[in-house]
Length: 457
Image 1 (cartoon, rainbow, N blue to C red):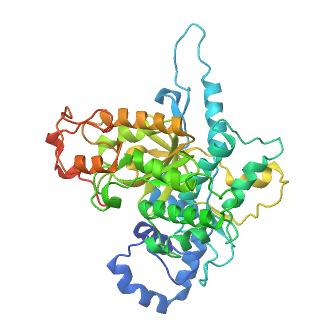
Image 2: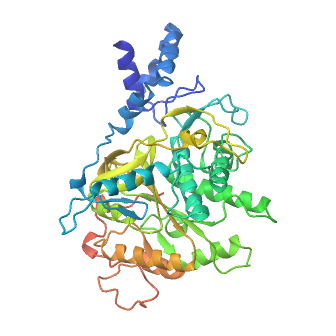
């Protein structure tokens, strides 16, 4: 019982043990643990070993749930239809002359869910740089969540939204190539090793947890690096990345603005001026409250999963990131990176269907949408210009429905977005060109209220 209590306090505090290559995840350590840590270690090094044994054993799930909260796997048709990355699965009970087969809708959702790429903690990979870390257990969940989001963008790009993983057919070669990009070695373009290297300028370090904004910027750096190295061939990420982080590169706070001119600029730079438009990955890091998400943002977050371009959300509880891919009523369905698995080498053109099973999950966990960390990042994939135009239309409608507190807005140019951010805008947007501002009406009564103030990213 003493050990159990100590373990629970460590997880609740999300403290980091620097003496182990498999650490307990966090950026904060309470004073009472800091003060007594050396004494505890000197009295009995066996305590640390015992804790590590519990953490890296089957009890990892219970440890994780102490941080993330208990997850549920039950799905009720009475809670309405499920939206999974832009696709609606009809499982709600409806009355009609022909009736509705909710079982088919549920089966469709389960197949869609289990086809999404899962990336989890791994153990047994080559040490990261000059460290002794051969596992990312308890500190790499945000990196893994981001890998899942980008992997899904690649699935959409290469195989289409309707692709499903088959259990009895030969494995698709394009699918295997995607998995190989996320292997756990420096040879894999988007490995945890290379992400940490690319993100040093944003504070990424081995053994330390990272936030959504730094993670988004890291992907921008890593993608640019690979593009510069692949002058003659297609880069590993065949799409431009646009991190939408608000005015002045996110330094002034406020609702981020999707600038259409900036999107064109990113596409042009990606194609080296050879094309006016390219596939585009939009990453929108947000902070939607202090200790919890402000309730007014919950319906807006829910609606983003209805966008055909939806790539879901990197988010979870503080220090316990997940990849949220669907919603039903007040529930958020997620893929969980916290399970510990042994490194798998995906190589060659031939693989048995079950050889990639560790990259998928049949357990459909969900948590209340209003319980997620207010610091998160939303992803969208736009295949072409028409797709981007549709995204802008969807985003503008959502902003108009936000009652003055949008998740993000859309503007034609950066100069205009600065003009808007520097002035109070009346409800009717009088004096602004209709095609210049595609965002939301601002309610003066909401301006300056503490609960709706944005945090700096």
